[in-house]
Image 1 (spheres, one colour):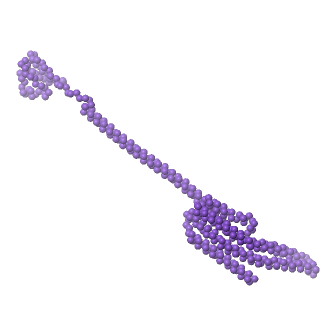
Image 2 (cartoon, rainbow, N blue to C red):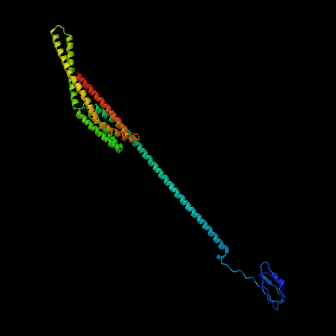
Image 3 (cartoon, rainbow, N blue to C red):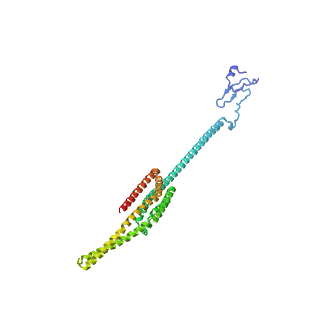
Length: 345
């Protein structure tokens, strides 16, 4: 007996319709929920046929979608981690490079600051030493100029006269160590000019020294004559005026008085001549010292420039010229007055 079309429609999709046979009279088809197998219960007289569902095809594990999805997911995670690691390495390298640059820059800045501090301390020490030496040089220069002006009244054989310029020469030697090259050269040039002026003065001072020697001898002779006159005068006080001894002492006293007068008569022109020779010496010294004054102004300009002080060569030269002109006019007035007094005498 063939199943109806309605029954066939109720069969599961995976069931296969049994072929019709003469020996099969009835078939009961039931579905087993646990095994999903189709079992046919034919009648006792019929042939029993059991059909099994074909198992799904076997898929390799590496072709399984879940495995492939997991592999791709793992690869994506690895790529993400790798890129993050690379990015972090680059950031760390850049940060380390910046840190090194900052440390190097800080070290270089500290080195520059230390070098600058050492240089400033060195400059301060040099500047302080230069100020001390320059002030000492100014003092010794004034002493040297005063010595040259007072040379006619000095004893040329004394140690003080021979060593009078020693201090200025020593100061110039100190400038040679601490001063700049321009200042050093000016100081040496000034020292040479002073030495030349000194030797010229020594050559011009011979007549003045002779006059000084003559004046000293006449003063000694006048002193002896005055002492003898005073001694005779004392003796006359103890003798009777009308005695012969008093008359003799009177003649001796008059002779001593005449001697004193004669000596002072010789001294007066010597004094005038000595004064005039001293004034002429002053004029010659003033003329010779013009070069010294010029070099002094140049040295002052160099020193003030080193000490960062304002300076004006023109003003210095103008002031020096005015001072020299005043001194020269004063000396000439003294000479004229001395000549006039001699003419009156």
